[in-house]
Length: 476
Image (cartoon, rainbow, N blue to C red; front, side):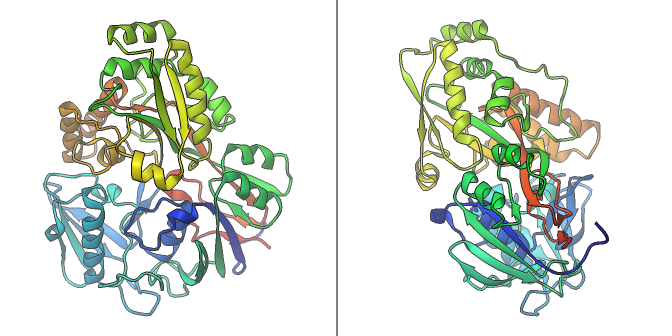
């Protein structure tokens, strides 16, 4: 193979829908293709790492006060925007405040924009309303920085390892930023092409039209393994394709009903049928790659008789048909809903699977409906998911979960330093989620990238780590 070489253009395929194209780095990025482009053009403060699971990017280092409420992030030396201007604390403060206004505490966990301030020209301070030991982790890949005052993102002026050369309908050509503070990438360019389905992207990599199919899924992985000219990269604990049950009201508000539906699942069959074996059985807890994952929680297995008893005790109406809404977003998501619906018949629950277009799903179903599928990446932190989708104050509380014990464990985890106290609080979060949470987390999908033989040093981290292509190179 030889040493890394400079040059060449990497042609990358990524999933997305034309109707969900987004140019604003602070908006909700539903398309993998948009998120990949943003991640190469703009720098966040922190990114996923291996050990530890948070690594520096635009912030070269960070430290907190003794109470872990006030965090100071120092900017990397030599960081410059693509137009040559230096990145200053004013740019970061403006970007963080804008992100906080748009996305709320979910992405920037401070009480208000006044809690984001500059500390001289090269440092910013975030002051949390309560102790938050996990702030650098909770900011990963969220805090894209733009020049102060930017509201038009057509030019996409960032400070990242690549700069935008052209953009057309979700497709982009990015060229090397020779002045990147992290050292110039080896690739001359990256061309990102939007594909609206894993099948179309799989056909493109099999046919040689692209060099890398990002997150293309298990079916393509199986096919690629038979080809000598292609390589399959498996990233474990990459995507949770889960089922959300609304806990605050509606047919699934009774925790006995939620447990019954979890007991209906044949998890091994789901992993085999939906993921083609490219994944692992999960235990109704999000964050399966977390070092503090509680492996002492008994693995939930299929128990038809107990499920039926629970439904009877809860007086659940089995005469009705319940609508499970899904979407063609993550690979295997629609199939997971259909397989689960078939399995639920064995406990007397009839489920109608409704496949919704992505725009309609996020407008009409997400955060509102009683029963739908979701998908999440970056499964290396229990606290990450607690903060994003389960804490009662989060903007993205997908299951309407408001549990005082869970909230208490969450705030305890944030207040605790690394060590036994944090581990105990993390275990409490997991046990509550396992016992009475709103998710059926039946399995965890491997991230499957298919690459041409010449593509080297692809990221192997699960979740958001897949977009960190700045060190990739081509051997020919």
